Image 1 (cartoon, rainbow, N blue to C red):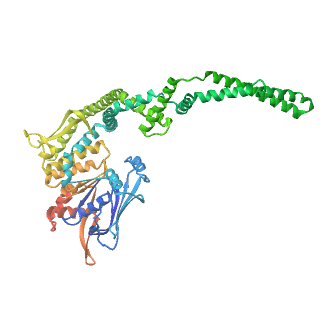
Image 2 (image 1 turned 180 degrees about the vertical axis):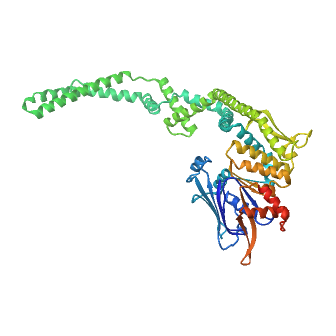
Amino acid sequence: MLNSLSIKNFALIEDIELSLDEGLSIITGETGAGKSILLGALSLLLGKRADFSSIRNPDEKCVIEGIFSIATYQLEDFFAKQDLDYEPESIIRREILPSGKSRAFVNDTPVRLQQLTALGIHLVDIHSQHETLFIGDTAYQYEVLDALAGNEKLLSDYSESLKTYKAHLKELKELEAKKLEAQKTYDYNLFLLNELRESQLKPGIQEELEEQYQQYSNVEELKEQLFSSLEQLQREDLGIIDSLREVRNKLDSLQNFGHNYRELATRMESALLEVEDMTIEIERLSENIEDDPQALAVVSAQLENLYQLQKKHGLSAVDELIALQNELEEKVAETENAEETTEKLHKIIESSRIQTQKLGDKLTKNRKKTAPKFTKSVQSILNKLGMPDAQLKVQLEKIGSFNSFGNDEMKWLFSANKGGRFQELHKSASGGELSRITLAIKSILAQFSKLPTLIFDEIDTGVSGEIAQKMGDIMNEMSAHLQVISITHLPQIAAKGNHHFKVFKEVKAGKTQTTIQKLNQTQRIDELAEMLGGKEKSDSAIAHAKALLQ
């Protein structure tokens, strides 16, 4: 609810303070008095872009401030998401500086224009005759019917399910494209992979083969050197082993002469054992060495293959070839398993589609159940508003796809005259008819959902007399559920208000300015009489005004 509105230095307004209460507040005034200025200022407060030309005194800043009671609006989560301090009574301020820059604040916290607009939707709903075309908008029609059907939670679940379903479809599309691209390189990748597999790569294989190549290539030298070494070790006259044994025996005889000699004898014994063991190994190696041209050829071929693979792939080590093989393994496996992955994803998508369709079907069912009650209520109100033959029909048809509202397509069809042809609402209803339909819909919604402050800006244009009185009655009934503000030229509607404000222009210090005054009972009678009979305010007009107020 809008508690108060303060406007400084805006258009024809120098400085006004407007305090508002619950119920139906009426704003009247002559054409051009400045009623539209009030709405312009309020629109700035709700996020409309600022126009520097609207500043009254360009040397001073324009300040518009509104205080809103929002305790019953359940906006705590909104404030948290926007990183704003929540207050049950929140203050919104908009400033237009002489420099042309605009600033906005919510509870003294600076906010972006988008944040202000998002918050404004929850606070004030402004409707004029020129804005009644919104009821022909599909999104609004769904919003109305779903509010009456209590579809809020179901619609949220459907939206999440649809989001998941679309995400899976996108994933499938990307997978199909990836699979198609992978298929193009599959044969080549498989060829490269098999080539690496045949090489039986493992860490250290190149060093191992290079050692074998050196051995097979130098058999004669190996034999010669090993044989010569054995001869030196095993000669009967002055062989190394016999010499070492003799030294060992001599050192053994000295062990009783102290620790140093015993240690020396032990070390010599170890050295002798090591040389004897080495001799056995040399003898084994020399016996096993043979010329093997075939083995040399195999090793040479394997090495040449490794060198060629490294050159082919621009690599310098076997470890890099192994890494490449692992990478190719993954690519080939991904291509080979793509069909299985695609099949699994198809099943997931189908499951998601069924879930989304079930939720969509429930939405349609609830809408179809609610639609007759809704149209009957609208027609009943339109009958009171002088449209006894008007008929509204909600047409719901299932479709084979999903949209943001479900899996149905909705049209509101309207016929103003008995026996008339039904056409889409926005094509067949006149401006005056749309105004009355808008009022009917809003009055129904007021009973079922928590609407923000509702402002009607001369939506009663084109009606008069008894119909105007009925419109006033409906607005008054609505004000039992929410704050309603009506800007009107009709005394029949103005008389229905709980509070009455008059907008007028006056000249002060040689300058014209717009001001607003809350009327007491006597002033209301004068204002209504003037609206009925003009400036003269005849006795009959005054009597009529009093009768309207009673």
